[in-house]
Amino acid sequence: MAIPEKSPRWDLESIFPGGSSSSEFAEFRSKIVSDIELVERQSSQLPRKLDSTTYQTWLEIFRLVQDVEMRLHQATSFAYCLASQDISDERARILVEENAVLHARLEQIKTDLEEMAVNVSHDDWDRFMAEPQLAGMAFFWNERRRNARLKMEPKLERLATELAVNGYHAWNRLYTKIAGDLRVEWIEDGKKSLVSIGQLANKMAAPQREIRQAAFEKFENAWRSIQDLVAIELNALAGFRLSLYKARKWDSPTFEAFLMARVKPETINAMWNAVASVREAMARYVEAKKRLVGIDSFRWYDQLAPIGTSEKKYAYPEAARFIVEHLGSFSPEMGEFSKMAIEKRWIEAEDRPGKVPGGFCTSFPLTKEARIFMTYSGNYNEMMTLAHELGHAYHSWVLRDRDYYARKYPMTLAETASTFNEMLVTDAALQSVTSSDDKLPLLDKKLQEHLQMFCNIRCRYLFETKFYEARKKGPLSIDNLNDLMVEAQREAYGEILADDGYHPLFWASKLHFSETSVPFYNFPYTFGHLFAGAIYRLAKNRGKQFASAYRDLLYDTGSMTCEDLAKKHLGADISSERFWTEAVENALEDVETFLRFTQA
Image 1 (cartoon, helix red, strand yellow):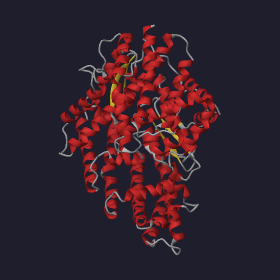
Image 2 (cartoon, one colour; image 1 turned 90 degrees about the vertical axis):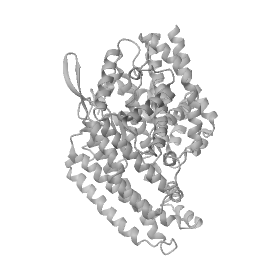
Image 3 (cartoon, helix red, strand yellow; image 1 turned 180 degrees about the vertical axis):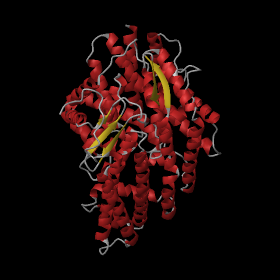
Image 4 (cartoon, one colour; image 1 turned 135 degrees about the vertical axis):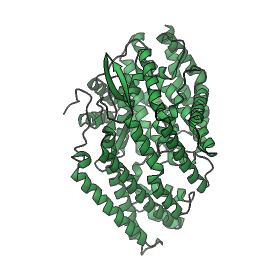
């Protein structure tokens, strides 16, 4: 087996042959459904008291719930991959929705178990969780038991979970369908074609400004054509959340996000306080870049502009080999894993219409595999996306033999391995060239990432914070949403963007705002960027001997809070602003390096 010679389609047949019509998959799902029905019956009959007479029954239920959820994860990943690779696959879309219903039923079962767990004494509960068969899921269930005390009474939580399937989560599915169906006419080399919104977004990294501008204008017009639908969806989604939070007596709309992220509010506040100080340094970078690319103002569509009139292309096999080589130079295991994932065609990279926009990595916990989704056309950013998603896949690989519930790490830590990969591959690319003309474009790519994490992601957080506060008073109009978005971009970017250089419809075009599985799907990226940066600095200082320590850190991400993980593996207090200030200062060293090269 060898690395494919062109951007490949992934192999889903080895998981379940036959796609959305697979009889093997249908049989697999049927067994999940019957087992959920079994667990529903058994849990409803489960004695509510935990003692010597009920101990074994409780143990069997807890183990069975974990096993069923792991298999449902496998089924959901498969259906989601099918729906992502072909938006016209209606059967796949229905399977995604049907699996969402099954997830809701499982969530109701877990809510029942939470209720019973809350009523068990601390001593009895601790003894139960210390059982060898349950030890791997102890952190998960201790967390659930603790969080259950912060919610509504169980019967209301069960109702909310059930209603969310066809209400709350349906809005996200609707958005995905609408975005996937968007098509834009594009003319290139005299040929006219219809491109997806994801393919169009890639063109905003073109070296020619007229192409970036044309792509952005078509991008805005495409979203403007459906802005009323997205505004309805976003308002409804937020209204559901706010009503639920009010019933739970949660004052802040970020409460659930921080709870799910296993992070303290003071940690995120400390991070944003440190990040707020970077605008001046990033403005210096942008001013230097404007001179290099010959523009007098910086607009939204200039953020991914490469330096130079033509950007080096990286054919898929070239990019794959480069990534494998340099990941392997730090950790042979990481290199071998990435080579295996590429050769076994775990990656969907073909550039074709009909795919949903964006990229992702999803795990298949039962078979201990992963699949990566992206659209690869050969630019440097896409090589970084490949490295990024392989980091996610490696993270899952490290955890593959742990209990399923010990593999469920939060979004804050989910970006650790992916960002670490990007940093390692970027530095390798910098070291592989010698002239300033070659180094500047790569340094620029690093700074583009900083600009994204410190300004773009921060503007998303600011927008959502302002949006949810305003939404408490009622739905917002399209003009209101546009104004809030520009206000957030102005605060995050400062003078970096020109007065006419904002992206008012970013609230519509960015799918993260419509994500329902993770609320406030923004701050984890900046967290991961800076946290991974701190880890990467240790890796550079310690070299290859740090690889095992890095692996140990990833191994614990599913069974510790962010603060405890950092304390154990880095000896750091991440609730302190000092940690984040140092991480930001380390990142800003790239600005000074870039400026020295531009002056030279």
